[in-house]
Length: 258
Image (cartoon, rainbow, N blue to C red; front, side, top):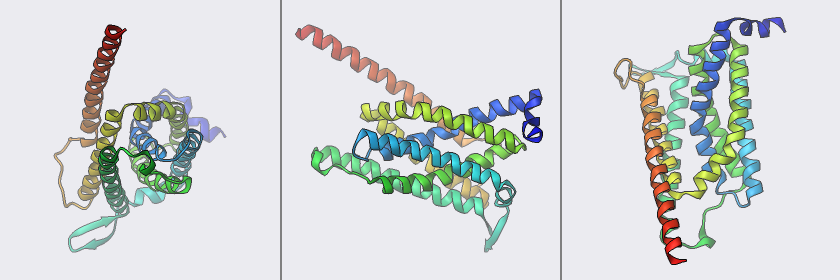
């Protein structure tokens, strides 16, 4: 027990914990968005909430399992084999397959939204069963969790700090996930923004996999994921201002009619 708590007895350990919690929450945003969108296709609010809870619990379990095999995870950045002169790593395979899945899945969702709007027929709206939703959430949880753990290893070498950070961040995400889901469903433009962001995240995962394979060389010191989150934040602020302006306009029109 003392070995587990030892990292938290120093200031550096507490700082590592706070940094990791913040990082896990930020990296978990895309996971929450994906879960929120997938769960929105499950009929019934109660079932949506249940699927969302199961999805986030699966994310927590997957992260803890990956942390327990951290020595194996760190070796996955080493080449498994070579395709000609291209090194193929376990990390690269997971990131590439996960990124492609996210791109294809999200593009299909965007196309479906256009078709659904054009038909405007509630009877033909897309639905998913609980099992189908959980299956998709589980796969994307593995991809996001793997990326998250690899990043965490670069920030701290203490497993207890990583475990506590993951648990705290998941509790925060569990508390805020229902509000995120409600907000995304309430405003269609926000949902489209969220879908577009997931396509960008998928592209980033593919680019990271290609960089691992030395097929692509990104400029030194350039963190495309950070830039993407900044772009998302900027787009979100602009859209929130637009929503605010529309609400003010609607209230003005209602007051004039009354």
